Image (cartoon, rainbow, N blue to C red; front, top):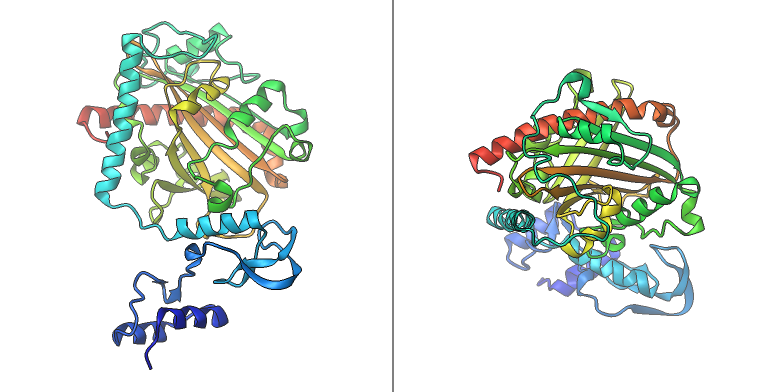
Length: 415
């Protein structure tokens, strides 16, 4: 007989899935256009069309997302109980999951827009009209312009005792000659220093999602609350310089999330070489497998890139020795398979922050913060060795990235 959309949705409510054969038969007979409703033979839940909660009558239930006791209400489409707050997040997440992927033209247009904004910020620095944060630290106008692509071996990296880099004249000299600075810490939130807590607060809730809890299953976190202070915070800070040969226009999401960029710029070789995945369908997203202990232990993670809104840039200066930040790219962890059970990594955010200099070049600060409910024993054992290893990798990344972006600038591509 004739099938209507309501029939198919009702069928889904009872069976939760349609067989490939039934989907094909319906489409072939023209009974129902399922092309925009199906994916891999499974009918997509049309939860985003729900505007009000369905009430199953008197009683209580546990919310599917937060676990709290709620009224016997929820989403009729997927027959799931939610509290009012989580229901709204559920609908928002369903809408986000069905958004079409951007076209090549749209990606290029977005990259051009981002490049234009970065170039405009640099021009404002050159003209002296760029705004500064209060008590901003200043470097000589030509500090980065002639930075070499490769530093002398003895000056390639320096491990710093804490996150205050530019108060040390020797550290400033390492940057000037093309080297890299690095520090890391791994400790419970309850024993972070005041500066470390402030940096964590500035970065940990940055997101390119409208609601990262609903769309990315990542909780909001107030690092000052007692129940978050028990978590383990891994904070890494690296800093280096790009010369005038690197155009600010290359610092866009399209370039920095591309497989070509990461193949060219990730540190390591041989057994320590980082694997760059090429089958990542999500836009503005890259996926890496990084060996920590070659052959024995490696980690795989996926990060989505977005531009940090201009009005939030002043809050990031605490992470960059109070330099004024003119441009920043956020990289936040996402999962390849959506709705996976939560793991020990509650949050993972990495921010590339750029301080442009009037006569060309820029200071780059990379801050990565991971918040974990626990740290694997194999990782905990090597935390003490992370500083020397991390400093070398930050320098290698700086050298490779300078070369790659300078080449894009010379070719006029990536912008």
